[in-house]
Length: 358
Image (cartoon, rainbow, N blue to C red):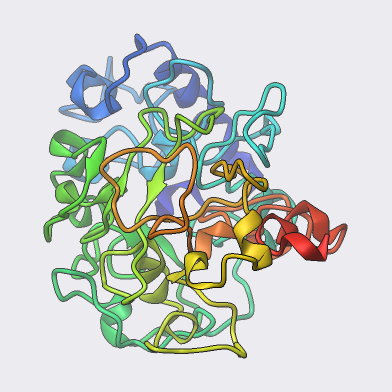
């Protein structure tokens, strides 16, 4: 990822690559399963004695790739796209709060665009996007939370000035044992699972979205304009197991996820907590609308079973609060990468669960 630098000047070649990838025929399967080798790889990093404009300019790259993580995943999402774009520039991405907005083209994790163009408070400031922030380590970092393969981010420590990466030792995807990002996700792009991943293994290919040991149900188009019947189904567990989506966040933000048997009054907002544990007359039982209880795209909840997508909830293991019930994993237009404008109106977010507070 280092080849792209931190300036807006590198965005043009990323978009060029993104437009190339958008030309690939649409498929409901993951992009890695049906694309030609040449779409991602080159034998010599040379064509006609030069470097093609759609390749990254800082190669050659590992694994014979034509570019790096950001180079491949930068572009504008469109219907039928086979590559998820998490960085959209210079085109301004259309943010989706509910997923029903006209023209929305941000995916489940949001977009790094706002990190690069607004400030680092809008998302994770991964290497190659935006500038270095003033934090010396991720907030709540304990260095004790391990993935299913035993790897721990930073091997348990976080050096001052270290940027977050897409994958590897200081990243989210793949194993934390590898310093080279392509090695960290090895096998994930070619043999990655899709659909329901109920029993993830210990390799990137066996985990939800190449997240080692994480369970979940993968929406085939990464939540491009999702509906209540077509979206990611995140895994949650009130026992706070290492397979939940919140446990992934807890590898770097452990102080916000650790502990079992915690009861109200809360000192931190609960995660891996099922709203069904509250009384039948509680405000939380109106999540999704009283008597309707539809899955709310703007405030997604997790379930203990991820064999299928939940269109409605029953408050029995399917209304589990997660970190990403409130936040976008990559970035959003809002402070602290929230899904909605917390400072603007509480009704735009908190009241999806705290229904009597609207």
